[in-house]
Image: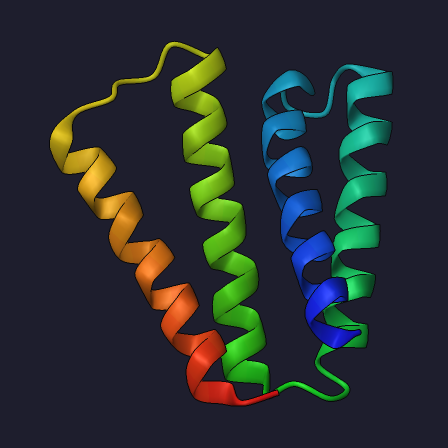
Length: 106
């Protein structure tokens, strides 16, 4: 259950990271409400997950999901570059997240 909460927290991190761009410095009401709500839920789920998972592993996985997810969405939908170096770097983050998951044993 903790890993599921952590995965959902990571996906919500992608949502708020993308939402923060739409807030225009928190000057737009509804994008700001969406961003703050997804931030809150993401942090709540992360906090629930670390009740049973090691904090170092959980935090690294959470950040990894958020970073990779945000970068992929940026490349697919926002016209961000898709260079070989960028794709390779994303794969290194994915490998690190998988390694942490396997090493943890939960």
